[in-house]
Image 1 (spheres, rainbow, N blue to C red):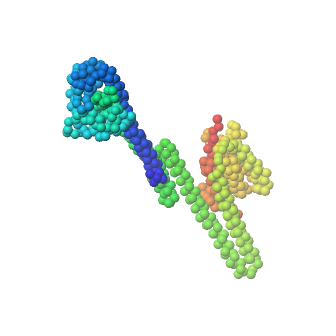
Image 2 (cartoon, one colour):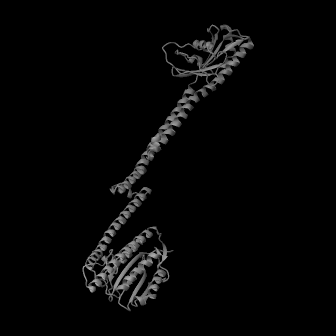
Image 3 (cartoon, rainbow, N blue to C red):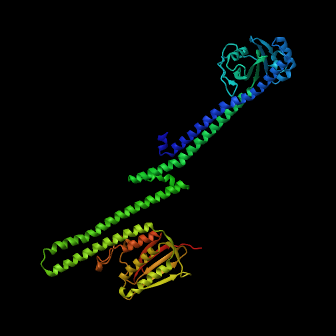
Length: 515
């Protein structure tokens, strides 16, 4: 049992607990059925004992001798006492039958019932509930004689007390009560009452049948409930466990979940959440692997240049060449440092982003704050001015679900990129447009625009198209922008302006509807 309790299977624990409950209920049922029969017999016995006591009182009061003639006369005189009984018999000290209600016209049942009694061995009487003795039926081929009951009573340790016995024979359940008769302190005979009590057996059988039906129904309900529990709850949970184990062993298999994702209940929701979590985890793993590969590739080029320059600088004696090689080495070191710094910052931002919780934010003051910051330092940025346009009925409030500092980072990175490509004294326009279900953020500059036919590649990690400023940028800025936009559930598109020269970046954020 301890092994099953320690087992991780919920079904086994459930079945074991129910089995224990059934065993406890079964034991109580057995004790109940064993106790109900003596209780019912005792009710009969009380009535018999009263009749026997009254009969003995009458015999002593009327000074009746225990002889056949006087007993029969006595039976006729007090026949009203025995009308509700099947049979009353009187035996003398020699165990000879001297009186029997079956031979008298005391009750019509006496002549309509022909009692045939088969003999059974009578063991030493067992005391039960005071003076009640209950013995089981043992079928013999010998003739049963009530005289044997009187004989056993005479030799028993309960002699002198009223004793009740229950016997079943010929498909009848009978109760016998026997008591010796004392006159002037001497035993003069015995009285034994016989009564058919099939209602006791019927009551016990009814209780047994009710209990059996109840147990059967409870067992059936338990079986059906266990089947449903196993099929619709425990088995899916086990499959989810197998799915997580396959993830751990790197043997990811979708078939563990495909049957449960379609479900609309909590198991289906759990399966969907687990599947989405797994896809997101693998996506992050793939991004990390790709990022590491790209970083190694980007570092390899300046390292190769650095190695060549360091080898040549030791062999040349020309000061001009040495100075040029020193500049190359310094440039490559700065490039490697910038890559590592930007990479480290990107990893920190991703870690922080995973812990931050989005909330309702007003994008208008955020954009205005960033634009004002860039205009304050426009002199250091070739006097490039940034203009903010708000296209909404309420120009002070446009809400989205997001992270305030990340929205600032998105706009700042785009403005930094646009300023680096913009000619002096030009203008950058930032537009916030509220549409039916989206909020658009558009950044347009007056530079030379994108030379790439596929503008999506500008968002690739480490991509940079600045031949004149090679090595001064890590190529991570626009990639970070795209990642942050996707975190906010938005999309980003780069294109060239249709009116005039310059580049254009469109960002779509889902609008947060406010009642």
